[in-house]
Amino acid sequence: MRFQRLLASILILGLFLVLPAAAAPKPHNPESIVRFCEDWPTYYDPAVGNDFSDSMAMINLYEGLVFPDYDGSIKPGLASSWTVSPDNLTYTFKLRKGVKFHNGKTLTADDVVFSANRLFDIGEGFAYLLRTKDKSGAIVSGVKSAKALDPSTVEFKLAKPFGPFLGALVRFYVLNKDEVLAHLDKKETMYGAMGDYGKKWLLNHDAGSGPYTVKEGKLEEYLIGEKFDDYWGGWKANAPDFFKEFAFPGEVTVRTLMKNHEEEITSETMPEEAYTTLRNIPGIDSTVYFAPHNLQIMLNTKKAPTDDIHFRKALAYIMDYDAVVKDIWPHYVQSKGPVPHTLPGWKPTFQYTRNVDKAKAELALSKYANQLDKYPFTLSWCAEVPDEEKVSLQFQSNASEIGVNVEIFKKPFGSMEDDAQTVGTTPNGSIIYVAAHYNEAGSMLETRYHSKSQGTWEQCEWLGQPDIDTAIEDALSTVDQKARFAKYGKIQDTLVDISPTIWLADQATEWAYQTYLSWPVADRARAKMPLAPVMGYSHYVHDMQIDLEKKAQALKQ
Image 1 (cartoon, rainbow, N blue to C red):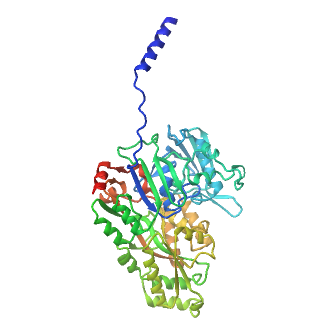
Image 2 (cartoon, rainbow, N blue to C red):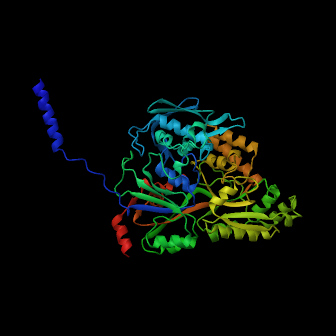
Image 3 (tube, one colour):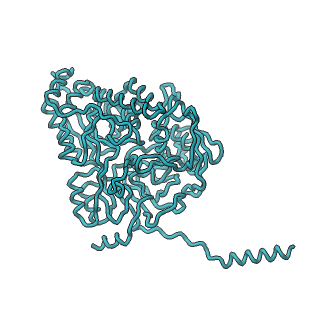
């Protein structure tokens, strides 16, 4: 028996000796990169980030339990399946097996629970989409608790039914619990024993399981992500080894970078003439599609003179909408109400059109009608979107027709975010693009007009109306979709009636890109396939491909 075991050991040892050594990972090619620009700074900590550029970064570094497909539908992510209790209050998720974080640790239910608690403890980022508290601190809607039933099963209990819960869950991202705990700054005491909850370290690092990991991050400049070879979702041939997201450097610089093949995808907010110029360069194409975004002038309803409903309606009637959708952005269409027409639950409500007589009539009803010289209208536009200057000048010109003096301020988006934190620093008008955070009208209505989003860039109106808050909460808690959509429609009617916003246009998103890049969004748009990517998910780099031979040829030209 001993001899047989010895012989078996020798044979096994011999087998190992003749087996080829495991192949070393193929070095990543710096030419295999997708570069794109957006507004800045970018925060990719999942408990902090919540705008366009933040989302573009987070979705490549982190993952959630569910994932939004390019048409906006929901499919499994880190959760391979889930069940819902008959009362719609308990969601139970089975986690996908074999998911590795970037440090090699296996993802478990404890990581999911930790990430949920961290998000709600910090209370920033997209936390407000998934939990609401009253003034006493009691949880009144959204996630009441998260619990690990076993290493691969997570249970979420809701305070009350939340119809689009799975859609909203695309904004919940899972972090590596051990990695975060290893990088707490205990000198900070904001979160008690958790110190800073790892926020400082996560400014330029990640603790995710997504297809890319942070190679280098400079908060005020750029983020470079590198392919995570052990990503559970695998990789297509020619998938990019790197991506670089950087601060928008200006239209002229972007055109130069694209011409020199030093950028793969432009921003989506350049002037139309810039896209026309780029399309005429060999090897560059562009794509246009209607995204669930719209362009608005948010009116501060708590600051004179825009605190007066008649003053706001006068501005809504005096605006020349055709100038926006025909002259400035010919691919756009005028908005019909607060919600982009591509979102499920949109209702085509009353549409303001330019009408000088109605504008004058509304202004005459305003308490500021005879003292306009005492109340100038302050208007900010985003420096990263050059054509917003044209919108501001058009608005200024139109408003002057009824005696309203508009003072224009060009501001980086970061400054506009800072201004939005208090009523006093928020201008009378803010020209801002807004996007749905999940693919339903309720996302836009909650984000834009519920009181809990006051103090953020997404609600410069400071609306603060309890009846609208209640209506939004009631709609979101309605499980039946048809009934929920009907409630969304009534809210849209109410908002149009009180006119807290000038809804200018639904955005036809346009990007120029290098043709050596295979980009699913452009491919689907060209094929006229359903396309409604949730904010940021158009730039899911994992699904892109780089033709390096074609790129090399382009560089030689």
